[in-house]
Image (cartoon, rainbow, N blue to C red; front, side):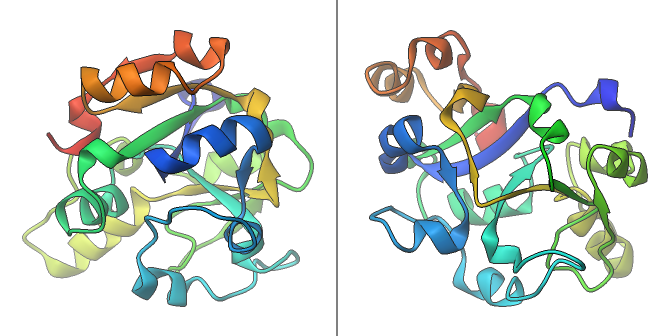
Length: 202
């Protein structure tokens, strides 16, 4: 993947968390556990994420951003019963986050046993943009399907938190959710508030 292909990064969250995020930023899994929030995380997935990033911290001490939020996690959240699409938003995070200290690139789902971790921003070069930005990850070959499922979930790992000023917009599923969010998010984020049902498999 080329740096020029990264126009924004994505964070999947519940609508109930947006107000807090606008004030305090996006928190890592471990930091978020210490404050009141509504999680859309899948417990079975979070168990697999109990690991260390080589040379770094616990995976749960990073904020995990996606290059493409229309991925298996989103599908499992909105289609698997975790939360309806009307209660889920995608925060649009500035790609300048890639240049912050100690940010790490995972070339696929960070919980995968085959994942490669690299320092950002140079680690972007290790990512195959084709699978990451693909519309689907299904394949008749189960091994290839597993590979595509993992690759589309390539991550940017930011230590501890992403400050509010890096959030410049949101994707929402409908105009009604957009109306609610307009009263919560910052003026800057309102300008990047977009109705995009496709992102939520609608």
